[in-house]
Image (cartoon, rainbow, N blue to C red):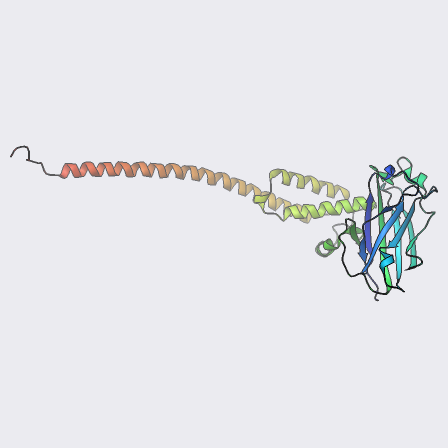
Length: 300
């Protein structure tokens, strides 16, 4: 099997502190990397010790054909959502098989650090986990059936986490505007992802026709542009597009106003024409009556 492109899987556990049992495990949805199905498993209370246990596991390994093996390089990362502090990572290269269907490290993630106030690991009760997985070799059949998963699969592109469907479009942006992110210095992966999502949403807005946009949409687009400029993006090319779109919107609104005025004037003219036509018919009748010869039926 050839070398596989590494995938990054983001898993957000909401209300992390609400899990109370020391032996309780939380399982992610299944996801597919390298034609194989996987899942992440977390013991939020440390499985009777003061560490958070996290594993990468072969999904449904009990149903696989005898002799299956999978050689994998993986990184398990508990994201520190505070841009100042570093995240916690566990990077390994292992063979997964029927005797070892899951791998992780037990002493990497002390619970007291994760739960500490202002630690950055728990934000609004959410724990964010990123797994980077590269399948190096597979012995046995691949899991060919695709699974619907609520886990967001992302790929690294120039330091930004993107959905696979976004990579081609963003690569075109970098080709056309290679310096647009050269001054962007934020290191926090969540903030970087947020700004890239803002950029893509802004472009999607600018691609709409002026008729589909409200003035508030354009005002919000200007706010988004200022935010991106303040963060270090060079988005002059987008500013020009937004200015063009604003001008087209103004022209559209002015034309709409003039069109309504013309319609109103035309309606008045049409009514005046109808009144004139009625008056003309009346005048025609009076002319015909005046031209008619006198009748002498009452005389003879």
